[in-house]
Image 1: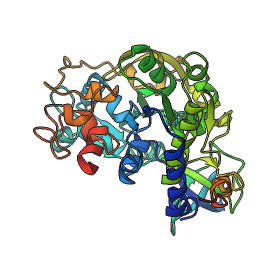
Image 2: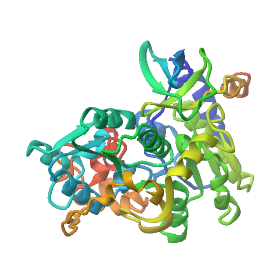
Image 3: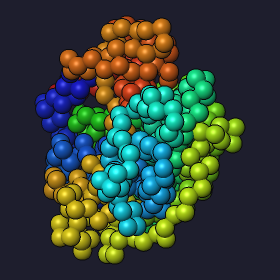
Length: 358
Length: 71
């Protein structure tokens, strides 16, 4: 496949690795924030290729993993209502709430449908005009414009039985929260490529100016990741801290303005709870009042009291403080077949990646 | 969840949707987020939406930087 296969060239990978080895002297911790990067790094064995002084730490970039349990409980409560159809991306269906999952609710008769796109949810709403069709608005900036686009289409085409239960999140404030928390020593950020397609490079500037930590916006193939690591190490060795774009074929400094305009039109920025991190100021997106009829929070439902799974250390995994094998449940009571926490459910979760590849 | 896959725009329709070929498979996608696309462009496809056009010149820079490099 064009723009995929050529970025897996072994000879060039060897050249980059040799260069990394020759310039890298210090002990360095690099954090990949994006869950799609975590999977790409494991799948391609990149951790094992690097010299021992360079460590890669996985961060809070899996949207499924950072979604609070209370949100899962909220959508489960809504799924039990008469005449409701819940539409969702596939990963969410197995995430444990306090006492149930959407998968269990589906088995018990709730109408829960896995979809590929918000446009599928709109189609379901058009085909089921006597029912309320809810979409689980989970995701980062890559996904939020697709949610905004669906809301604007629903408005235009008067699809009034469609709504969003938003828990959409903004990535840079979470990176700031990690730096302020000072639990992990981060020497450089491998910044999320597809989030940055939408937001551009400027939202990361505070990391280089205030915290003096290098950032490189990275693509998803092995050569992209190796080159990004090389660029970060070069910055560290040169004592520079800049936001550089490795994934230049897709990311512009200003991002995708049309997508950003749609986000700004439909959503307002709010403080938001992140599983494992807590409440982060201005890190979430909620539907604006002017589009209130498309906000599923208009349906008042009683939500059960939140119960965290006992012993699960997802939170510390998400902050990069521990690695999954340090959790007492890992590979024991917690596995992809029987996940206790969200980091084991999602294919992009750090625990699932360790389980599968390590 | 932030996965986006490159594909080639084969046809563009009047309703701002397109047929996009990804590894021999045709997918329909919305062009709502990048209306300025032409047939033959490569785009990144995420959750049923094309989110950006791939810059074909910039895509080659990594090879220019490393292929000439003598070990």
